Image 1: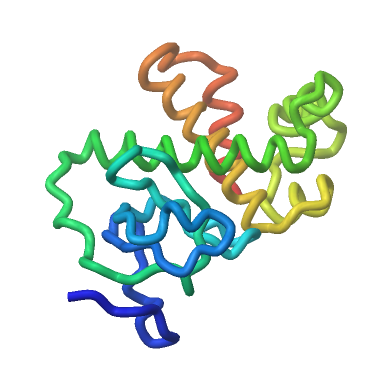
Image 2 (image 1 turned 180 degrees about the horizontal axis):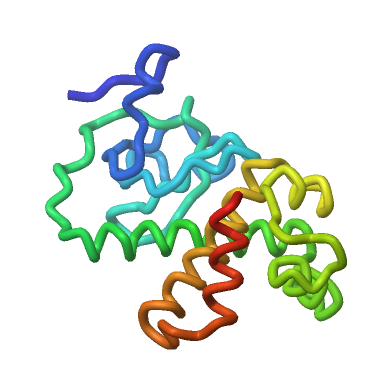
Length: 176
């Protein structure tokens, strides 16, 4: 059963849902294609839709999506769920790094110093402080710091579980 999007049906648009693309004017060749919702990009007001026929990912406004069915029940084991969460967080992290030009050597060094206590008087970093320092939304700072924390956690468990630097950094990030 197919439903056109209206205000009350927007809640059904969730990651993994199957949709039909409709009403595109700029790329009408995709009208009628089915796909799966991957992620909502709030800044653009569009869903990333992976088309079933080609694997192409399009940014589509909710008004141009017809809900088809809810996502299949998740049968992944915990490790797969954690891996998928890490991938989503990494994609968001990469967007934030690009958006705020945080990949330059100067910025990367400054951030490393900030997160490792190398800046005078800083013993912990909150998302609010980080957001203010780099001119971003608090939600973006939370995602950025979450990815850093995931990296620290991975290092602690997989690479160097007893390293003092890992413990110090993890302690500072856990105070957020």
